[in-house]
Length: 96
Image 1 (spheres, rainbow, N blue to C red):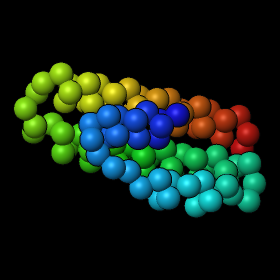
Image 2 (cartoon, rainbow, N blue to C red):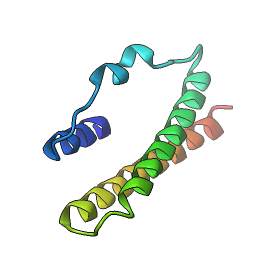
Image 3 (cartoon, helix red, strand yellow):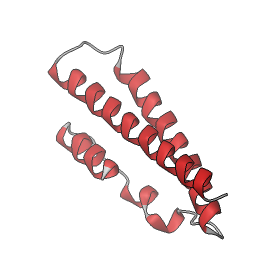
Image 4 (cartoon, rainbow, N blue to C red):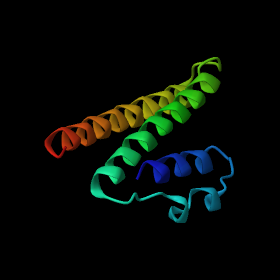
């Protein structure tokens, strides 16, 4: 869902996206449930890093409705990813 939201935003702003880069065929699923969750945590952290890179590019721009909306959306997406990490960590704690 996050990728769809970002893609829609980029297209609405007149940008272009390369959807091939984001196909799920490149997703590692792990060799066990625990490994899959560990990979999930890693992916969530990498996603947060990417969102922060985007924020760094947007933040210096003039603050108008568009930049404010973009920054708010990214902040929401980061919060979602952090929540996912906590859920994964909780699962790992309950399933050593």
